[in-house]
Amino acid sequence: MSESPINPESSSNPVPPKPGDTGAYGYQYPTQQQQPQAQPYPGQYGPPPLPPSNAGWAVAAVVFFWPLAFAAFNHVHDVYPKWAMGDYQGAQYASDRAKGLGKIALWIWVALIVVFVIGYAILIIALVANSNTNSW
View 1 (cartoon, rainbow, N blue to C red):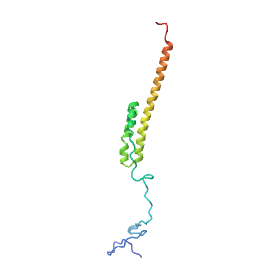
View 2 (tube, helix red, strand yellow; view 1 turned 60 degrees about the vertical axis):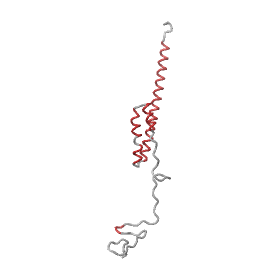
View 3 (cartoon, rainbow, N blue to C red; view 1 turned 90 degrees about the horizontal axis):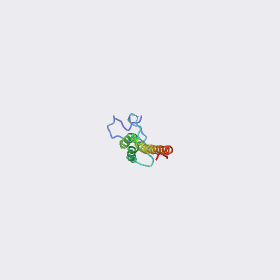
View 4 (cartoon, rainbow, N blue to C red; view 1 turned 90 degrees about the vertical axis):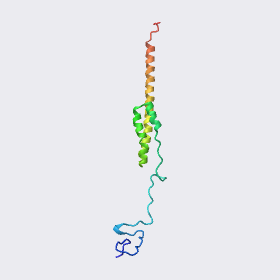
């Protein structure tokens, strides 16, 4: 029977464990050939850079279509806390969502302007067609 490298009964100098040996309580010491540590994301070390908050797009949402501004600003204020907690994908999502809501607000404003211009054009055409030229 071989003696374990870590033996609580021996009071002499302990023998350092060899790689691959099994110690007390079934612990197996690591070998020299360990697997490389997984990187947080490919090609870089450490946390990814902080994504832009896109606060400008949230302000655009206030200007162009204010109901979307509430959600846009909520996402703007979620970017840094999520990044700081390590939720890098959540921070990127919040950044992209704030930008998307700002763009949606801009497109809604453009659509409303087009509808108003078409409405005024129809109104002017109707007034001109129904006007009596002999009234003066």
